[in-house]
Length: 251
Image (cartoon, rainbow, N blue to C red; front, side, top):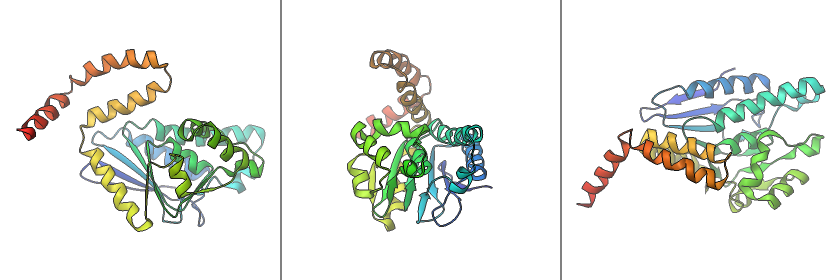
């Protein structure tokens, strides 16, 4: 199982997730293949930005395959959720910014993948939810990112009730960075990707690496560690080049 991948001459990769049925459901074959593709992309030198999207406008990912999950045992369940965790970690730790293009349904494991992305741009026709409690399982792995994305109160409501929310509410809660009409979303995602791709590639990778590191640090540790990162930026030549260009434009 492979997923459609395109990389343009600006270094923008667009990876379309091909799941099953109308809601783009994913099981072990899709999860394993997608993880391998994203990990391989991280080694592409000219990669600037990764856009993740669903197969079509009906869904980003409508969740994990319930037929596969219904047959799990305590032992095989651990293996299944570890594979989904590895997919989300491949997204979260991808060395370049990852943009989620969110159309239609984004549920359960699909929302966990979206939460692992750096930026989330959604269609006004999209719907979000963590319905796992309704089928007897807790929301786990990257659902743990939900409290820091939307706050503890909204996260508790979503995770305990299993209820869905619409795009406007997702945007209000800051689950979505931007909200666009369905017909305008793809162009808006590509415009944002182009803006990122035009920045210095080394500083963008450095900033993403720092964002991940800061998640494990106290504020004091993060501030102290960032002093050395500032100095390291000047070894790449990007500050000198971009600052000089800024000065020339001002003249």
